[in-house]
Length: 220
Image (cartoon, rainbow, N blue to C red; front, side):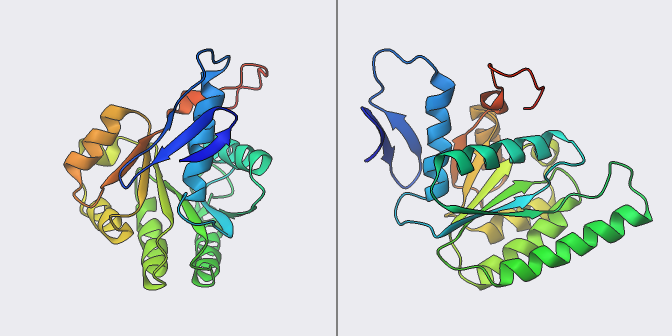
């Protein structure tokens, strides 16, 4: 058990990470659940030197990029750790030759960066719904060759859940059984486990947790 706040504890075992022993009255349940994510990033067993977030960040604005940015802000505010961003997004939503040149350039820079990460780093991935999984497969191969185990995969799409894909099977198998998979719902987590045998550890993190009640900036 790790004390995350006064009278709030996180119970950690091999297959789940969850909050227990809540106070009788909780004014903001979503804030409590956000601590869950923070503990996940720390990986609980040993302190991590750094959190590396790999995925798209705005601009351009997309749902996945917005969630990544919000998680970055949340971790930066609540953790006394270095947080490194590896932005893999293209320059715009229009996919032309310039888009692919810039995107491939970012992918190459990310690979070089991951080659030099420490085994104590925690790597957070946003999993793409389409061909972006090819890049993510390369990233994971690099990390597994380095025997890095602190890996988190955040799922945002049902595309590869509704229709099983070979690239996705390879991706999750290479990620390893110790990798933690964040899903949007319990149903999504169960479908991931049923569809892909390489996925063993899951945790639910709904995107609704990232809606800020105090600000009407439209960011999720």
